Length: 542
Image (cartoon, rainbow, N blue to C red; front, side, top):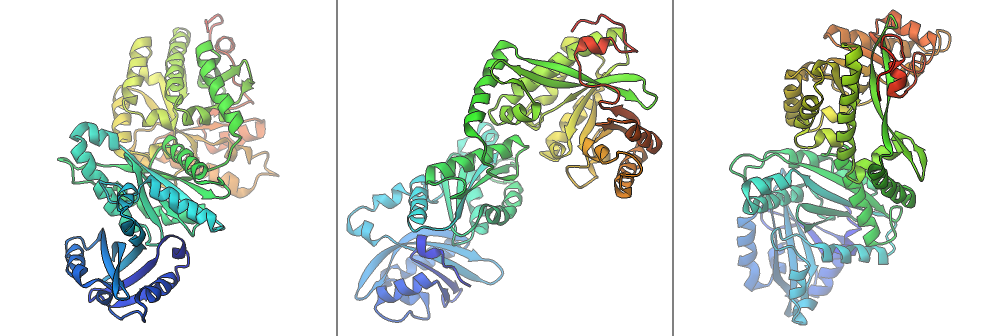
């Protein structure tokens, strides 16, 4: 076992068994101990400790075998040396990892307060000051690459609000205990404050850190019995790497924070690696979105949907933005930024209400007209989403069975208990649901029968692969046919989007597809243009 990166952060790392026999010492630890003791390293760890602190060490280990942190003395020649000692139990092999930091200088200078200033009172973990010092040390020693992971608990505020801060503190302590078991002894686990934790991986790339944190999601997801009723939390994680994601501590931490918020906005309980973007453009667009909301620059277009006999049956509502500064901004540009900046719930609420009002006008001319509205993961994950939808239905007086909410597969997989409750509540009122971009998200199909969905929408990427029989591969055609057959076997309808030519239409018709959407039959258009299509009477106000 080789731990070369420990030289940069810790003075020594040892592994001992239950009899305190030393099984391993890091290379840096070997040098430090030999210099400290002025002799060879003994076979038993007890022989390193100051005689007056041996019983204290045994008592702390007995009381907190899984993990603990304490200050005590070790032998230094004929004298003593103060150290901070952290211990982690290795389950399965009945051994302990001992991490040592020499704090004798602090003690000698009568500055023991420094240790307190660099550690969190509640959890005992290193705090922000300690973390910065550790990162700065890695940078000064020209470390080729290291990573910072920022962890933020999902649902912690609700625990605090429901059970009080004492229970919230208990949850933080329990979270610390779980994280300590997973984080390697060569890594630094710190608490920044509140429900934010940081892991410094001194020898891992961002991808390596992401892999190392895979078990964190499961560890936090286990019920917390520290509250009167079991609390269930998640954790959103963002990872940034030095130097590619920042040349100093502040920048790397800020970008890890940005990646963490991306995890939250993408549905929470996931790990995201920071992706560099054109920051100046993003900030400009953020400002323009704020202005656009105030100036009424956002509007809705509608792309018609047809049955396989080419009869108009409804439309999908699509948000559009014509900015005074940027012109027409595509949705795939402004929606992620709106989600990241916290504006998506507002825009989503506006789009839903606006679409419902327009649906009411369409239904005056065509009672069976169906409106499909996309739901952002951020919007769907917010508390009270079902109430928001029901309020819009009541406000506009539409037939709820004519409203279809399009939700992606990955969104359905987040907070499943809350998802099922919200979907069930809306489904009881008649609202229908369609799985958007089917085939590009979650691999399990169990939710198709468990959740109250009524249709799937085959992603346009699959439809695009079918140009004509000579060019389309058999696998593409078989895959689409399999999707349609699967949906029909459990009584779901199938919508194909992105249909642009007659060859695609003919294949989908032969495969049994129910509904068609695409440029072949109609591009996105205004409500006035929709009202001019066969099947609707002209003159419907936008």
